[in-house]
Each structure stands twice: as C-alpha cells, then as structure tokens.
Image (tube, rainbow, N blue to C red; front, side, top):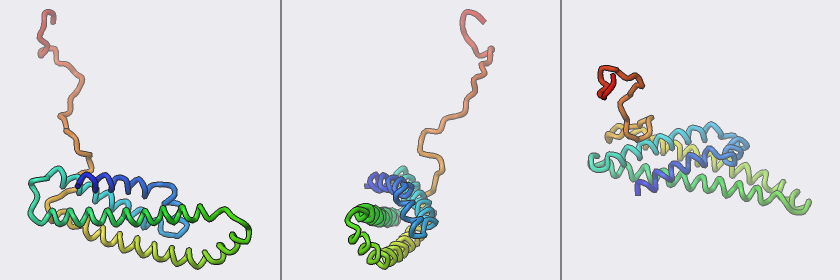
Length: 170
C-alpha cells in the first residue's frame, strides 16, 4: 500500500511539472502555489520512502500518520485530475460555429472566474493540509533524506601502492 502512495506521489510531481498544468496555473494566477505544492509533495514522498525503509521500527502512532500522508496524496491526485479535466474541456470547446464561440465566450468568462477562484481555494486548502501533515515527520522518527536510498560505498581511488602488489614480478 505504501508503494502505491509513493508511486502516486512521484506521478503527482510529474503532473505538477507538466506543461498543461503550468499553463493553466499561470493563466489563473496561482503558479507560485503550484510550486509550493510540488515541494510539499516531494517532501511527503521522501517521508513515505523513509517510512517504508523503517517498516518495523516505527512507533505505534506512525501508521496513523502515514495513513494521513497517503490520504493527503490521494486528495492532491483528485485535485490534479480536476485540473486536467478542466483543461481538456477548455481545449474541446475551442471548435464549433462562430455563434457558439461567442456564446461560450460571454458565458464562460464568469464561469471561468468562479472555477479559477474555487480551484485556487482548493489548492490553498490542500497545501495547508499537506504542510501541516508533512511538518510533523520528525515527531515520528521519520526523516527526509536528500540522497536516494541506495547502498553507500566507501570512496576509493585509482592509485595503486606497489608494496601491496603480490605477484611474480614487482
């Protein structure tokens, strides 16, 4: 289940960086909120990765916290699905007769302003929720590692000491 939330968080980071979402947010005027949301989702993804690596070593409150993180990521996914749906509807309404375009232009101005306002409000609420949840990661012994999880090896050099060479010829 944690794998699904981690992969979903990774997918959300890609979606937030997509050209369509960036274009919509710049038109509606909340591109900076989107960047903040992307940073928060990245933090949540790193916390979920840390929680997965410490599977059995977490305190008893941590599973509830991780569940809240997962639910917040799912809420963000729903919000971005709404963004993409609105973008597709806008693109779909581009064609048609001139009278339909004029009618849609005048009726959609008010509608697009209300949609932009409601989406902006949803982004703010989601960001506030994600920030409040993500900021508590230290309480449960979870950390954010800037290095990806991998086996860290000792640094080596290519210099060979001739005293350490064993063989027929020196």
